[in-house]
Length: 112
Length: 114
Image (cartoon, rainbow over all chains, first blue to last red; front, top):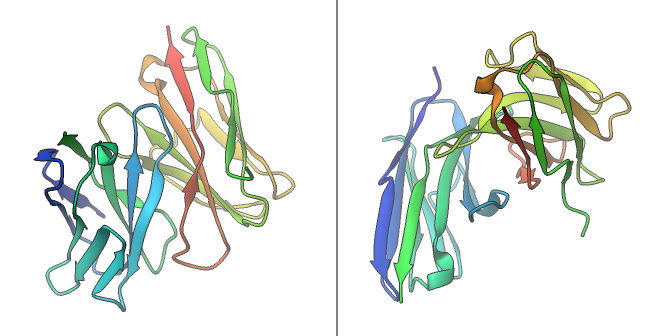
């Protein structure tokens, strides 16, 4: 069945360093890949997304890359700040369904 | 703020009771989704609507669960004869009608079964 694996489960970085979170999906029909940030007790917040016709997308300090052949996509956060600390979820959606399949999350801690 | 609104935020109930949650989507969004999130996990899809039509239901959605969206606006999710394993955060999201549109989530309803 559909599956999204996410690594690492926890990530600690120093303020100003970069953070990279990687996801792998199983459904070759997947063509939409959003990333959500979830702070404790709050809603998942969409921070960036990418569609399968694009290999990379940037928005200020965050970027997402997609390798359709390998079924990998990654979130890159540069110049991390303490307020980036949260749980990040990747997700995938295929063209023939509208449900999101989520990864298991990465807890990012940015130390000042 | 015209984001997705969910009520109540918290619900504590005894095992065996019925509970109902409400979700009000972003007003111009035709699609409405329900997900369930347990501690330390990503959200799991339960069901979704396009307008008033329920288009897909997960195998996770046992016959104790029912969702409605009678007028294509707000939706309710009812759980009958609640069990301990139903304890979770129930999240609602909405999106525009077309495929691969961003889904925007509400704050969720946290259900605790005593």
